[in-house]
Image 1: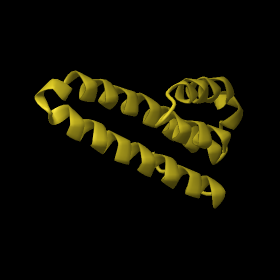
Image 2: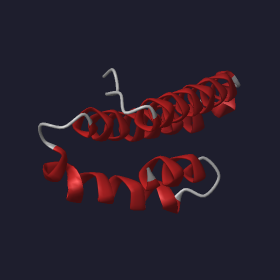
Image 3: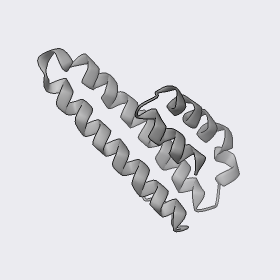
Length: 96
């Protein structure tokens, strides 16, 4: 659960995203074979895809399309974090 909180905070304070991804990779082996394995996989994918689209958005800001990319990325990250947290809270695996 703490990783979802760190990921949510990373939307405003980027450093917490780095802490979250490090925790994901360090603790990932402990979740193998449990429903939480899918959560760790989902969190890792959310981080890397979110980072990729943030970089693309920043690079293309000068042609204004970057703002739309950044906004869409922000909304997508919020969706993934909230959906993952709700599934975790209900004891359900994350669809990845």
